[in-house]
Image (tube, rainbow, N blue to C red; front, side, top):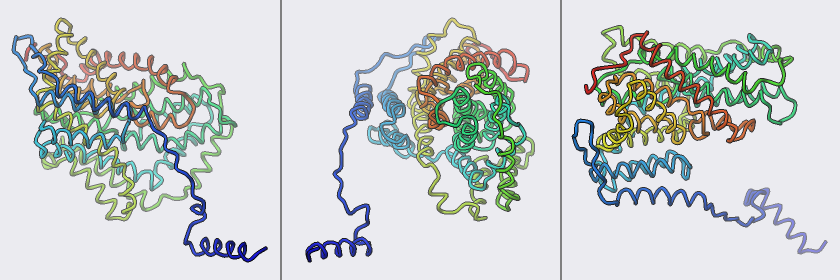
Amino acid sequence: MNIEMVTQMSLTKDIVENKILKPAESVARPRIFLFDWKRVFFILLGLGVFTGIYFSPPWAAAIDPLGVSFELSRQAKGALAVFGLAAIWWVFEVVPIGVTSLAIGTLQALFLIRDPKVAFKDFMDPSVLFIFGSLVIGMVFTKTGLTKRLAYKMLSIIGERTSMIYLGCFVMTALLTHLMAHTAVAATMFPLLMAIHALYSEDEEPTRFGRGLFIGMAYVAGAGSIITLLGAARGAVALGFYKDIMHVDISFFQLTLYMFPIGWLMVFMLWAFFMLVCKPEKARIEGLKERAKSMYEGLGRWSTDEILVVLIVFSVILIIALKNFVPALEGLDKTGILLVSTISFFILNILNIKDLEEIPWNIILLFSGAMSIGFCLWDTGAAKWLAINWLQLFKDSSGVVFILGMAFFVMIMTNFIMNVAAIAISLPVALVIAPYLGVAGEVILFASLLTAGMPFLLLVGAAPNAIAYSSKQFTPGQFFLYGIPASILLMFVVWLAITVIWPLMGMTVTIPAGG
């Protein structure tokens, strides 16, 4: 070994040991640049749609059934242009969905569509902060182990029959969405379902049971999330729009009252649906009950943090519900009440600064952008122009057909863009159309919320869909094919709700036409 070689080895050892250069960095690797033509195409398509609409010649006025003309102003056309760009960028995720939301506010400001103070103020609307608080509750449930404790206990009770495992997992998913965002529920349930499937099948190949378990979880997360305001952002967003437009405040309790029977009806119908189309290959999973008992016992006694979280969350939900019955609480804002729980978690050191940094701000920004584009369409008159043109399709229809038509419209839209955005776009339009056909605004609100919560066709329709897909138990094509009959089932439930269930519960469905 010559002196040059010894010197080279010594230098290399000194560099690595003294961390002058990390071992992984000791060999330079050429950077491979891959040009993503698909991404660039859809970025340019969104910009092209915006440019084409914004700079196009004036569009024809909409004429309502009374003969009143509604002109589409330059600002209103700009609102439609921003929506066109946002829809494309949201659907194809050419940039993070939160960044698309930032583009919504930025375009409104730069192209003078709305005053920047107004456009960006919507980003911190109370409904957005309510969503933030809901996500924090989901985070604290997961961090303290409450979700695992509940899930393991459920499995130790339901036993080894695969039909009951389906039902138990679906019921647990739906129950959790009453208290936390359905995205957090899906993320919490996912590892548990993976463990269950590992006990069912020794290899990693897809099974019918796996398809039913994971697609069913995604579907049921949507069905359960319509029942309370904690289940998803769309409820708070829709109620905020409804209050601003109709000057009627729908309470937490009212929402839960009307949505509870519909949501749980869908949960049990989806269980029957997946037992039919994804009937498990095996009738039982041997050993599951004992494994679940062992995992539950491994969690030990309830911790102080777990007890505190249960008490805080229960107290917040109770106070929000009592607002409707106790005059002294009536003036309290539900967002403020919910945020007390967030503050309490940090005061009590249940959460810390690291947890704050891990909050999905991308999702918060998505909700913010959805609020901004929704108000933009309403404030500029674009929503009214769309509503009057859409009304022409229903000018000779009955009230029931109109409600079903609007519910179907929302259901399809929410499969292409996030459901928050679907509500933000669709609700103002529907509320303008409804009085002409003698339909009460309240039933439009609840029917829209019902279908917006259950995008069964496309993975981009909701975060639980994408989480379920990561199980590799099904393809996007299979998800779409199962979604067709599931969506038909959903529309049947909407019809049942507006013709039978809600009227029996006292909801106003019809009003004098033209009111």
